[in-house]
Length: 270
Image 1 (tube, rainbow, N blue to C red):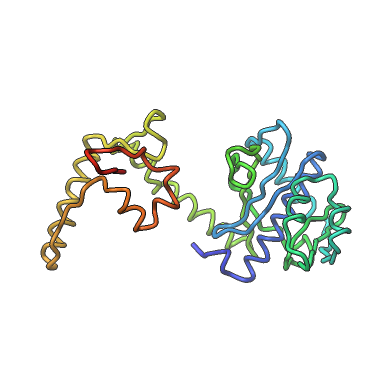
Image 2: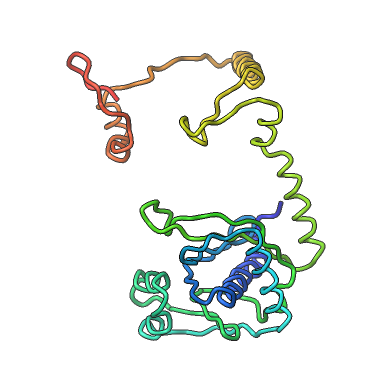
């Protein structure tokens, strides 16, 4: 699939559509507060504070319908330049925008984009009108901690994608469905290759007999291939001295997250 973030036209289109999403959300949930809505490789998302409300599939449909209304109304999108004082006053009721503004370096050009009754901070660029955003699809939703920190509030993240025409959008959605069918989690469950358990960790697979056979065969293939190419194999210990990790630089950066140090005779190991 095409990398949307690296395509100039699609990047602008999806950046604008993120604002369209926020505009619709603001209509439906007037108390909503907004963090960031960046373009990503496969579309865009927006992190939103909706208080105690948790987004569901029905909400996604309502938001999509409201977005289509705004598209049909053909609202012009205008770029506005602001001083720091103007920006702080304009977004005084949104703590997330105030955080963004207060963390900008002095001298940073502050710009916002306005479409009818909605305005949002953004560097841009954006398309000229909401009518250019008609070929979009809201894909999924999830929770996301503010600034990615689990100590912060959980926000609602809504994902979407936007294209220039219906054909490109339909092709993208077709590829998305194909990708779901090839999802390793789906295949692994259907073919009883591996399982996961919350006590072990969601990203830690437990290989079942069918999966163990495949893994073993792959390991044998790779081992033989490397031997045929002239490589020799070595094995290193599972632990090392603290001095080793100090030399590599890992100790200074990761010691808080490493296994506790253990002492054997006169040496310290991690």
